Amino acid sequence: MSGLAKLLAGHTSPGVYHWSTGSDTDLVQHAAERAGWRFICLDTWQIEDKAQFLQVCKGAFGIEDLAEHDFDGLADALNDVQAGDATGVVVLWNGWAPFARADRHAFDVAVDVFDARVDTDRAGPFAVLLKGPGPQTDLAELDPHRA
Image (cartoon, rainbow, N blue to C red; front, top):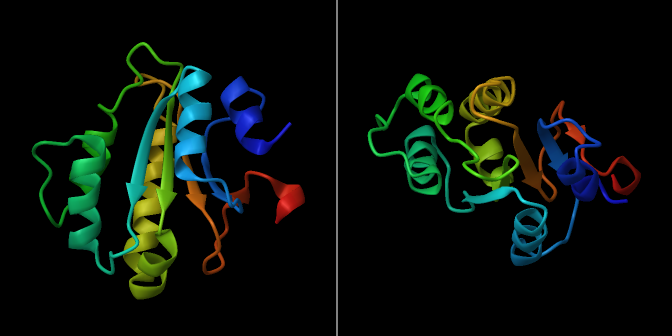
């Protein structure tokens, strides 16, 4: 059973993970939705700073009133991102590496914000998967046998 399948089946706890996969975004979305999870794609391939990152988050998460330079605002808004009728929320973060390389401090804060949302019980399970290669992180690998 793959790391994604284990996560979606509840055999792996929601969290923020690095995921060394070549899986296509559409396939991941299909798997998540078929398993009853809400899917959100966060695409930051062209992002190199905090303001741009927050702007992309605003669109991806449907946040209407996020201050451009405010990670606290993102944290508050993520607490309101709910699964609805779904089991939980899976965020596939494509293009995390360019942001991590360009502004490591902002990237680390973003990961901390996502990690804090994972620990929020009231809005349902929440997982963030940093897809593909990039700079070294302290994140657990979703598929450790593939790392």
